[in-house]
Image (tube, rainbow, N blue to C red; front, side, top):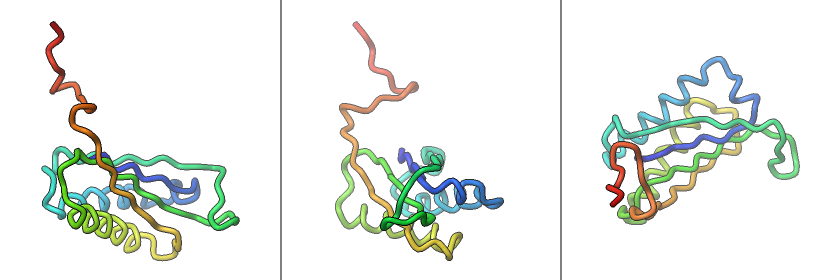
Length: 118
């Protein structure tokens, strides 16, 4: 935890330094102090078809899914860190945003934490 899903235009996904963007988002989440580095997941989803403000304009949006329990200030600071990391790597992209979303712990599972089925 967290899952940082970077959504972006296909042109950005094809950028030669996209790996640096993924690492920058990971580093920003890690620097928040809210998570263990080994638990941070970052992935990228690109789109061929999109409009931003009614135009074909590059964009980056991060949906950051975290387990509930952090306060609004922590979530806001995390969102700011992630946006700042993207802006530093892609200064020409005007549409950069992030939403931190809470996940209910009771509704989240993963391989190494499966509940015993009786």
